[in-house]
Each structure stands twice: as structure tokens, then as C-alpha cells.
Length: 399
Image (cartoon, rainbow, N blue to C red; front, side, top):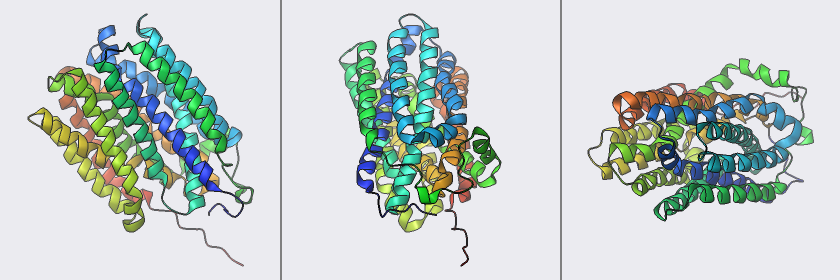
């Protein structure tokens, strides 16, 4: 099933989708670059920091369960615009709330995660519409846009840290830019499902969305995404802290390692569509899982900071395509993309829910850098279930 393209110009929507992904990346990495400073200001241990970061995942899970219903009812454009405004308010709250204690930060991060979860599903649904309309693999490049945003946010954050710019000023300005930039961009989104694609299964009720939790392929795709989300999210949350604490590096060096990880992910996502179209989803993601595993082991057990940087590069490169390819697999039938993406994203975000406290708990006992070895287990799971992401075959038709 494919979306008719005769009356739709997808070029403005393509640019708008890139913008939505880029701004989401800027917001996420801007927050991440300031985690070490906020941790120090609140005097948090690794396990306590893990529990604070858990608020983002908890908010995301709350919104993801119902996000398929939200997107199907209100459309991806309205959903992204609304969530961008909520996220901007939440980031501003975290930026100022840490002066008052842990509770304001946790509440703000919960709202941040809630907005991010629904935004994520909605922009992936729009990305699937554009991908189907263009007739080629472009979803990884949209996720490359997210990575470009994270790299930009990380580099700006590194400059802010090096220049001793206050956390509150840095993140508040970022929040305003993200909110206004996203709301302006998404005006050019196209409708999520063309009229001729509506089917008896294309419902909008919450019960309709929940029935997709019983589809075996959708659940396996969700497990696949969970594994790669754990590899990606753990890197985003902990690489900076691990380099600072595990390799006794300055804060700016830890932020640069984080930026390198994100740059490697961006590179993989930008050039990945060519590999996917030439060799297919399953062989490519399996090879990348092995590369990510090798980089992870270098980062965890490397003897020096330069080796850790090389490991971060391979780790990010290998983890680059798992999440976007999983979103494409969930969206193979565009008429049912919203509920399936909601299910897959909900499962995937469990990695963000369990990852921070798991790494924090292990970090208290074996150091943060050694705790990151837990990512290897999930990469092994990704190798085992990768067959689930093969493209759906079109249903047979009769005259």
C-alpha cells in the first residue's frame, strides 16, 4: 500500500520534517550537555542521577501509549506543534528549577519526556508519509536531521560550558528557539493519510490503537527498536559522564566525546539510505550492530582517552540506523502507521525508562564506564530479532 502522489508536492513537507527532527535533536542534546553541571549542583550520586533521568523516560512512556490515538485524531502537524510548546516550557523549568532542588527538575523532566514522546511518534508518522510518497528510503536521513540537531546542540553546549555561560541562560534561550522554530516549520506538513488510503481498519479510537499490541511482528519490531534505543540513549546520557569520571578528563573533553558519538550517528544516518536500498534492511542493521558492539567494548575497556574516543565513534556509527529503520518497518502500511509506530516507540522507549537507573545502579558498584558494558546484551538481542524488520509484502489483490 502506498500513498498517491499525483496531487501532493512532498518537497515542502520533506523540508518541514527535517526541521522537526533537527529541532528535537537540538533540545535533547542541549539538555544532555548540561547534565554534569546539574548533577554537581544537586550533589547527585550516579544512581541518584539515573533516577532523575528516569523522569524523562517516564514522561515519554506516558504519552507514547496514547500517542497513536492523538496523532490519528489531531494529525501529526498539530501534535508536533503543541508538543514543541510544552517541551519549551519544560526545558525552561528544568533550566531554572535546579536552583531550588531535585523536585522541580524531576517534574520538568517528566513534562519534557511527555512532550518528546508524542512529538517523536508524530514526526515519524509524517516521515513515513513522505518516505512512502517519495518511494525511496529517506527515514534514516530524517533521523540524521535529528542527529545533526544533537551535534549542533552538543557543540554549542560545549562552547557554553567552556565559556562558563550559566545553565539557566543557555537552556532558556534554547527552549525559546526550539519552540518557535518547530511551530513555524510544521505548517508545511502534509495530511498523514490520503483519503484514498482510508480503510475500515483506519480508526482513531484508543481501543483501535491498543489492538496493535497483539501483532507479533509489531512487537518484535518494538524489541528491535528497544535494543538500539538502549545503545543510543545510553550513549547520549552517559558518555560525557563516563569520560569525565572514568578517564579523568575535563568537562569540555567529556562533552566533545559526546559530540563525536553524535557526529558518528549523523554520518551513518545520512549515508545509510544508500546501503539500505542496495543491500536491504536486515543485512545492513546486523552489520552495524556488530560495529557498535566493537566500539562499545573499545570505549569501556580502552586504556586511554583517545581509544575511548575511537570507541565512541564506532559505537555511534553502528547504532545509527536501528531506530529509524524500525520506524520505517512499523510504517510499511501507511494507513496503519500511527498506531504501529505508537506501539513500537512505546516499547523502544522502555530502554530510556530502564537504562538510566540500570547504568546508575551498576555505576555505583563497578564505575559508570564499566557499567556501559550492559549495552552489549541488548545489541545481541538486536542481532537475533533483526529479521522482523523485513519490509511487509503487499497484500494480494483480485480483479
